[in-house]
Image (cartoon, rainbow, N blue to C red):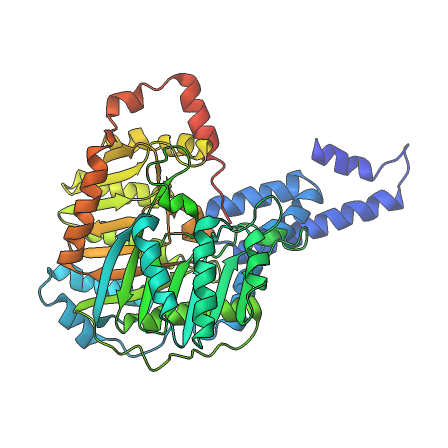
Length: 489
């Protein structure tokens, strides 16, 4: 149809029409130019094919959509502003030997792989303690803020405006009176409620507090950034204590018995030299968002030894060409010999991760995935369900927990290696969002987290191959249709 239309551009009542010729030439030039850009800058084959088809089958509209939605401008901006995005250093033979000396040989190889993916060094002497839900985490956070003397740094995807978060605002005021500097970074979409950010108004009223909004959506100019969100959750007080994980700031996190509105979650209270790496992530985000130089007021406080846990921070985002967190996740699945334990609110990874999990189960690794029975978006639950039979028939165990919605993120390999943070198991986290996880080796912490997950499993329903296979025809169509909505960059 389109080629017939193009041919007709050359004919108008039997004569050549200059306007139509110019239109055709412009269409071909734009389509070919856009295709060249796609081929040079898109690594994902499915994404490339989809964009090229749209460009040629939707004259001008396809090119316009690609210009607005398909080009990763954040990667270019990040390259300019994030001078310290990937640390540099000599290959850490001794550190890898020290960490892996009591581990199987394959873990030494995995550590080498992880360093090649992201050359951040492990640092020891850290303490990392899990805090479940806002009822446990928020009082600890507020207590630390109230005692701040130098600075409080906060980054949160969601920072709701409600009675619970008002307690944080009051703590900010006290910390400022004590001489502390307060910087708060909120995401432009995560805090957006009915087209305005009410928390922004409250933050603006606190004298002495600095805040910034990460990629605010000034429609239509910022529409290309609508998926490129800062999903990190970071809180650092005086360089001595940090809270790091996947927990947002909202009263929903204290409503743990409210089946409809409550959110279950986990975060981690951290002490030790690893805080320096966490602060570097905040520093990069602050400079990225504000365009201003950031200098920590507590830069000499990070070397404090707190325990013996080795850990390193793994930041990731669309400014990186390769998905760092996804690569390390994939590598960890492949290195597992005994058990893989996953807890995540959203489980929509691409086929490479699904295949790795299936193959792990087929070679005898116990693979358990704990996810909510219903997410906060019904269509996501349908899309997640489309992968069940593929996994369960090959031995993967999928547990679905009842309400309240469980937003916890835990990934454990062989009862010792731990990967926790803000990233979900989906394309948004692996490719489109700015995320940050912490990689840890600790048998004690792994045991504590496994016990937490075991409690979740007792309330959960185990998915069977029979029920996944016997879904009605209409439900299978529905589930697979919604899976197609999984975003690709």
